[in-house]
Length: 120
Image (cartoon, rainbow, N blue to C red; front, side, top):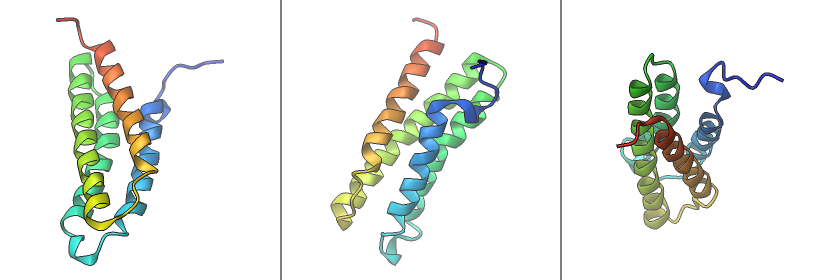
């Protein structure tokens, strides 16, 4: 059985991030119309940014470039957490399905970054 990664789509962190995007979109449609160009847009962009940066980074030529994009994805994950908490606290929207998955994706990104970056 060949387990070699041929595409970013083979990465478990990308797959879980992709599922997270779909959940975030379902959450974001529950926001009021007044948030269409604000929180709704921002929460979607943050979620998409996670998987987009994983994908783009995986196609870079150097480990350093890949790590840079993983750092961007990790930052977007922190941004997304803040925005989901705002959805919950300002509009009483349940984000219970998204937060554990987001935490898992964040931990996976941190682990990959730690393994790829040279020790200081």
